[in-house]
View 1 (tube, helix red, strand yellow):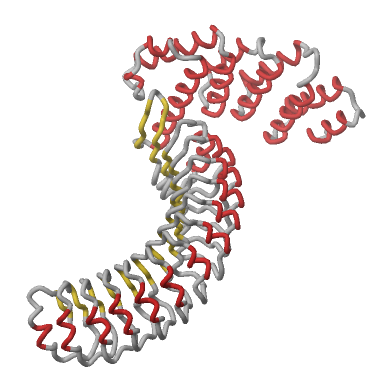
View 2 (tube, rainbow, N blue to C red; view 1 turned 90 degrees about the vertical axis):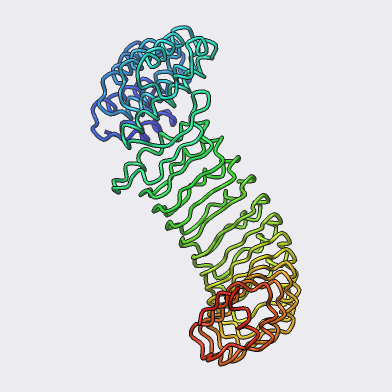
Length: 498
């Protein structure tokens, strides 16, 4: 028996006529056991007969029988589509019968949407009758907020969409138990399925294509499951604003993600993603992108098109370099590049004038560029776990800087300009090589927390008592035997760890 594709090619090449092609495909659909081959047979049958002037009654009866009695729900769902396409009027009766008797979600969604497209009195009255039955049940899935009179004002397609939402949430509750969700006008807008697949059965991965029919969905939380793939149909969720897929097992992201043009927040933290699709740049409304703890080595140049982006978290990947196009992210306020393989600070960062937080910890940086002072809006700078031996004097020009973390480097001195950091509240110098504390630290009049843990300090300058805003001083793992008198006076208001 030739394959469905071979039959189709023989037909398009005019080696066989339409009648022969139809009979071959029907024989394959009815007699083969492999569902994938049967589904391809149905698809090619629809293509061959799409423009045929006459469709015989035998074909209709065969498709009707598949819709009603085939054991595979995917075959029934696809048959419903082909039956509707080939016999738009004649298919109404079998589709209504199937709607009233179908139990599986895949077929039920397809049949409901097709009847909604028909938009005639029979479909409408079928939907209204079913909705009335739901209203009379104890379990009403928030339809208790509706009256029959409200449903009667809706179009058939609107009724179909409400029923699709009802069936999906009913199946979710049956399958996973209690879930958090929000409904507006009969449609689900917020759905929290975090940790739904706690036993690792991978059942949620199989259920995701159904969820993509919730077209009014704005917030979808799928954290802490065992999801391996995202279906291409994710693009159906055209109203989606927030999507959280963190703590799963994703390796790839479908190119269709770029069609979620209203998306503002995308969290893909802690997966196994090795590359992002070029369509990432199509997410023009995106403000928050978390790719922390994946296996990324590069980003597509299109990421520079994310002009609304405010937070970009790339912590814990394998980046050695990043595309220069990221300099176009002029709205960016938070850039996290910690724990990658960077040997120098990317020069394009100097163009990010809105940047308030910059994370560069856990890389292989030996130098901090003098242009760092150009980041005039910077409030937090993380440089922990690097190889820094000195800092540029221009660092003192960051007059809005509030937090500076230099933990675990190779510093022995600080620039005198450091005292110009008039807004600095937290300074972490722990695990460096200081033998004496630089005088510039004593000029930090706004400093509240000073961490000197794990250095080689034997004494502290008297001038440290000038830090009138100081609330916490950590001196653990040093060689200090006695505090200067000026600090002793502050002991009542400063938490000092020795």
